[in-house]
Length: 180
Image (cartoon, rainbow, N blue to C red):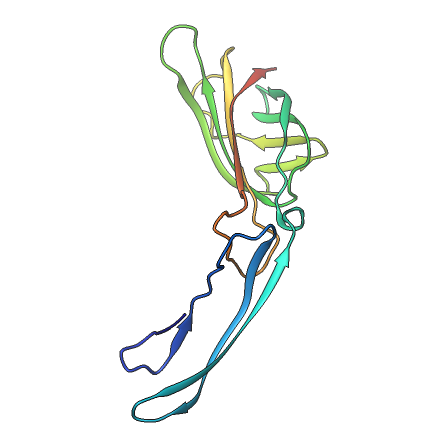
């Protein structure tokens, strides 16, 4: 569908919509519109769109399927979480370290939002290493959990036209963590 961008009808933008949901992902790579002919009553436009179709496996980011063990060093305040499954090489992480007492309310000890790989978050083989040095408020307790939200960009250029967008983030709640 072509719609005018300005009241003077000097430039146009193109909206591209899929008629039905395909089994592959479709991305609009390039859109081009040009005025071919113009008179007092009519504007003749010529447009082109370049699409790319890809299988889900080609663009989907990878996230761990499970976490085996989570440990925080009292001395270095470094969290090490052993994971099962793959993880995208580049992404973002949000972490919350929470004390969960048997009686009383949970208390947030630390919060971190960071890109990885970085100084704060590293992927080391099958482990995620999170540096919370200087971010922990209070003392490390016996009963703690960590909540993680991992995000990664899709491996495709252009705008995905499918109504069902691929998952670009995944949350993991209440991963038990022990202090050493």
